[in-house]
Length: 241
Image 1 (cartoon, rainbow, N blue to C red):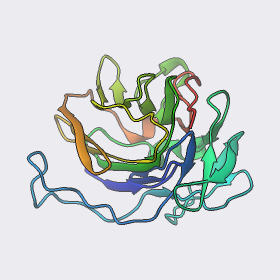
Image 2 (image 1 turned 90 degrees about the vertical axis):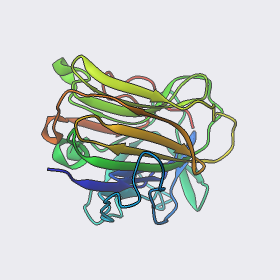
Image 3 (image 1 turned 30 degrees about the horizontal axis):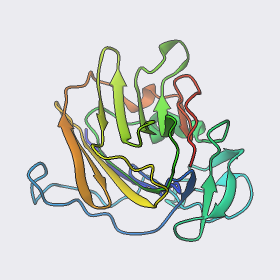
Image 4 (image 1 turned 30 degrees about the vertical axis):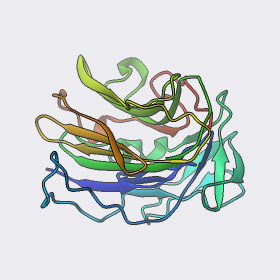
């Protein structure tokens, strides 16, 4: 059964048709309606549900709680990240050393997803980092490692990476261009599940890269950890932005 999600959030707006994020070494959020572009991959009548699964605005501007404005109550605990000025309103700044937000209480079922689901991750980000860093990640963890798991990350060369994995099969899709230029950028990642998932990465409303890959079956109830700002597989690769 397919499900549709939207999310928002970091300086990092994470808004997800599952997640939407605003990211920066600072992370913040902006409210808007997400529309899937009509293109050669998704037909004009591509079905989409307007329900928001999670929406982290980062508009608290103080404290250690990242509140979910979707109404589902998927609040996170902020560990170390500092409040600062965002793209719009407030944002969170991650130091790339030990800052992250913990949403793991909702990883199983709620922030996890099935291979055949359709998702949109949307966010603003700004960074000048030349180190690998993970913006958002969820996985089964422990003795199972990254099985299943996924992450949205910044590579050392400034490209944005979307990685989905289960066992020995998965994919890693990177943007063609680099975006660690210290400027604000808007990212939208579209994951269209089914037998051969089609994935697109848009930056500043322009299609940067896409792929179609077969992935081993996985399910939402297999996820255990969900965090913003670091890799949940081994709790490394902290985001600087």
